[in-house]
Each structure stands twice: as structure tokens, then as C-alpha cells.
Image (cartoon, rainbow, N blue to C red):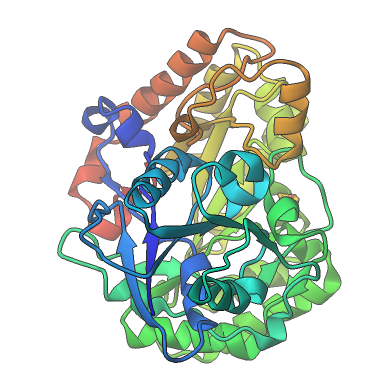
Amino acid sequence: MKIQFIYPAFERHAQSHPELLDAVPCDEYLGGPSLAIANLAAVTPAGYEMAYCDDRVTPFSLDLDADIYALSFFTPAATRALEIGDMIRGAGKKVVAGGIFPSALPDVAQQHFDSIVIGEGEGVWQRLLEDAAAGRLAPRYQQQEPFDLATLPPPRIDLYIGAENDRFHPDDYPLQTSRGCPLRCDACVVPCVMGKKLRLVPQETILRAVQDLASHGKRAAVTEDTSFFFFSGARRHFREFLKALRDDPRPRGEKVSYIGITMPMILALDPTILADISEAGINRFYLVCGFDPITRKAFGSGDQESLDKAVEAIQRCKDNDIEPYTSLLVGNDTDDEGVFDRILSFTEKADVPKTEFAIFTPYPGTPAWEQMQAEGRIIDRTWKHYNDANVVFRPKQMSPERLLQGYLDLWRDFYKSKTFLASLEHGDRTIQF
Ligand code: SF4
């Protein structure tokens, strides 16, 4: 039986607004796919033939023949994913889907697929395949208990690497160190999809994944939110990971491309952890701003104490020889029209080297989505617009048009004085846009 996995295409900032390509002197980082498909491939029993299509690189077509097609997608890719689902079913073939979007809006996804998986897929995958082979696919599969991560093999990244070509060959692929979260931040989908219990991927599995990546000449991108550092078990687990990285002889920046973090974390962390992170060879943070109380107050209302803290967080990164690559968000309910000037002046004061800008997006499955639905503020349900580059809701303190214009102006104004970036090495001039 042949399984054809498909990772559907989605738009990034530069595809939604091609005019930014002229204004931003950087290369676009086209990251590797999420780990969902590689994880399913890892738990697929022997005897199945597997193929993988990254629709961003080679658009999916029905020429890719298979017994069953399986998609995993998040909301930005939902428009294309639902189209692919219809195409496959229209050809009389079986297609199943899982991932963030089908988990958050199962009733919407259900209309386009023979079967959908809600939540983690590994625990139900084998049963789904057996049912497909027996011609009795159920409309939905959902594991009741969180998947036991101690039984999780390392992801089959080789499937992704085999699909690379001259145009698409990422330097890094995601690395997962935990799943689930007991908190309920308004813009986060993690508890909805991964559950409310924080579970840690065993250290041996993480290190095997890092070694796997290294054997293919790839780095690991720790894309997860590190707010879980607040839990002491998770902090210990992360320190062990750092210790193992220190023993990895590869040069600085060659093992991990970046880790995701927030300003409150940087300020709350024991300074020795920052030093350990740097010593482990990690030289870049993906510093997510606009979801935490410090940056919301600093940029939303111009609170001076919070602004000072934001500048201090950037300085701490620099003091530890870690590049603070920021993702600066606009459109929070606390943002008035002054947010754009405040953000720009912060980037100057803190001397932010490179950044991306994003528009607040109430993703299905988050508390923000529920709240805005209840308030009647969702104005656009075209899922491909849910990519942080479009205004899909009615902002509280400005018009949707003003928010979009302010976001586009930020890109242009910030990069006006950064033309020198174009002459840097590829890795130094690459950003996520
Ligand atoms: S943003 Fe981080 S801390 Fe908040 S719910 Fe999501 S994973 Fe948990």
C-alpha cells in the first residue's frame, strides 16, 4: 500500500505583498515543513511505501498516484489543503488530513476529506491505515490520551531531505523538545492541538534527531515557545540538552539555527542559562514580541518602564553574543495608531539588527479566535489570509486599512537604512518574510 504525504502550500509575507521584495534587502527563508508528517512516517509500520510532496516546491498533482493521500496543515495552508482534498476525492481516491487546522475546525475540514485526525496523530495512525486497507475509514480519529513521547521514534527527516531540490534546500529543520502546555495564552494554539499537559521529548530522542540532522549537514531549529522554562522540570531538561550540544564539536551556529523565546523569558532567566545557551553554540534567538505583557505594554501604550525592559532584553542577547532576531507584532487590542512609531523608535534605540513584522491573527483554536467570534469581529475567513500578513479581524483602536498600511510602512521604514544587508552572506541577510 502506498501512502502519499502532502504538505500544502501557503503564502508568506512576500507572497501576500510582493512589493515588499523591493523594499527589503534580504533573502527569504523558506523553512522546512512542520514535523507532523515526518513523525507519522516514523510510526508507519514496515511494509508501507511512502512518498512525500512539498506543495510549496512542486505543486501537487494527481500524477502522484497512491492508495491513500495524507495531508497535515495549519491555518495559512488551509485554502490550498481543502482544494487538494477536493481534487483527490473528485478523482475517486481516499484522502485524510490532520494537523492544527483540522484539529481546530474539524467540521470545516471534514467536508473536504474522507477522514480527519484531531489532535496528535501518532497514536491513531496505525489503526487509520488498517481501516483504509480494509475499506472502512472512519470519518474521524482522535486519541483520547496524550501520546506517550517515550515511545516516539525520531522524525523521518530523510523523507523531507529527499524532496529537496536546487531551489529548496533548507539549512535547518524543526526540532521538537516538548508538547502541550497548561497555560492559555490568547493567541496560542498549542494547548488546543497538543493538550494541556506539558510533556517532554526524551533527551535521547532529541539528540538522535540532532545527529540525524547533522548527518545530512542540517541544523536544528527549536521553533517552540520557551515559556515552558517556567516549569523547573522543563528547565532541567533544556539544560541537559544544552550540555549535550556543548559536547557536539561542530562550530557555533552550525548545530542549532535558533531557538524561539520571548522578552520576559530573557529577563527572567538565570543569567547563567543565557551564558549556557551561548556556550552551547546557539547564536540566534527568534524573539517573538507582541504576545507578552512587556512588549504589549511597551508598544501598545508606550509604557516607559516596559520600553526600558524591552531594550534591556535586546542588550542581554547581545551581551551573550546571541543575535536577537525579532518578530514585531501589531494589531493587539492594546495598540492604538501610535504603535507603529513606538515600534520603529524601539528598533532604533535597541539597535535591532534584523526583524520581521507581523499582524495579529486570531487563529482558529486559540482563545483570541473564540473571543473575536463572540464579538463579531472576524471579517475575513479566507484561510490563506491567516498568515500574519493580512488583517482578518476588526481591530479595536484603528481601522483594518490603517493597520495594514502601518504594517507595510514598518517594513519599508525599518529596511530603508539597511541596504547594506544585501551585501552580507546569505545566512546573515536571510529573514522570515
Ligand atoms: S504561548 Fe507558550 S506559554 Fe502560552 S499557551 Fe502557548 S505554549 Fe503555552
